[in-house]
Length: 394
Image (cartoon, rainbow, N blue to C red):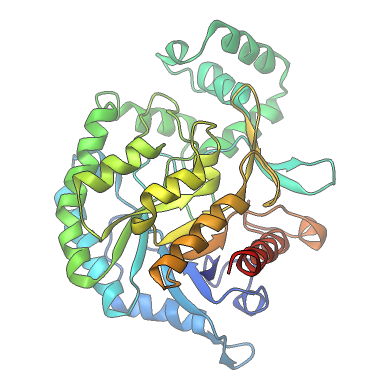
C-alpha cells in the first residue's frame, strides 16, 4: 500500500513543503487550470511534476512523486454525445498519451452530469468544534423545489419530504438560502464549472432526454473510444463513484453500487478499465458493503479514497472522523492488505479523503474538505490501522 495526498498545485493553501511532512509518498494532482476538453500538453504536465518533486523554497527535492491524476475531466459534450464530443474524445486520448509519456499511469475521471460532488454545508460544526462537510437531504429538497423550482422536482420527493422542505424554506433567512445555493452550485476546489441558478437550471435541462440507460450507453461509447489508447499507454483509467450515490436534481447516476461497477468492468473487459473505490461516496448509501465491493472488484482497483461518513435516517450524512462513522475503514483496509499479500505486490495507492477543518486550520482559508491537519490526522489513523493489521495477521 502506498500513501497518497491530494494537492491542488501551487495555489493550494497546503504548500508542497507541508505535504513533505504529512507522511505521504505519492501526490494526487491535476491541471485544474486547463479548461475542460483541452489537451494537457507535455510541457504543462512536466511543470506540475517539477512543482511536486522540487521545493523552490527549500531548494531541494521533496521526495514526492506525482503518481495519480485526479482528475482528467470528461467534457459535458462527451456525456451527452452532443456538440464537439468527437473532438473532445480525441483530445482526451491525446492527454492520456502525454501523461504516459511523462510516466504517469493512473488516471481518475467521473461521469457525473453537471455537478462533481454535492454538499449543503461546507463548514458543519461538530460537537468538538471542528468542521466537516455535510449533505442535508431536507435542504437539498428545499433548494430543488423552491430555489431551483425544477418543473419535475415534486416527482422526486415524498409528501413528507416536501412538507419538511417547505418548513425549512419558510424559516430560512435570505442569507441561509444564498449560502445553500452557493454551496450546491458554485463549484468546489478542483471543480471546473460554476453556475448561476439560471445557468444551472439550463445545464440540467440539457439532460432532460438522457435517462440512466442513455447515460450508461454514452459512458460505454466513451470507454470504447479511449480504453484502447489507455491499453497502449499502460494507463489504468479509473472511474470515481457518484457522490452522493443517488440521482440528484433529475439527473441520473450510473456509478453508485456494485452492480454499476461490475457492469462497467464487464462491458469493457480490459485491465485498463478500472474503478477508483471511494469509501466516502459509496458509504453514503447503507446498501453498499465496502469490504465486499473491494473483494469483488479488487483486481481492477488501483486507487482508493479512505474516509467515513455518518449516515442519518432521512438520507442526510456528514463526513465523520476516519475511524468513526457508519462504515468501517478497518475492514476495508484489511481487505486491501489481504489482496496485496496474495498478489505479492503493494501497488494500490490510497489517500485520506476529506478531513475535518480543525486546530490552527480553523483560522485559515482552506479548500473545503482539504485542509491539512484533518487529513494528516486521517492519514496517521490509516497508517496505524495498517500497521496493527499487518502485525496481527502476518
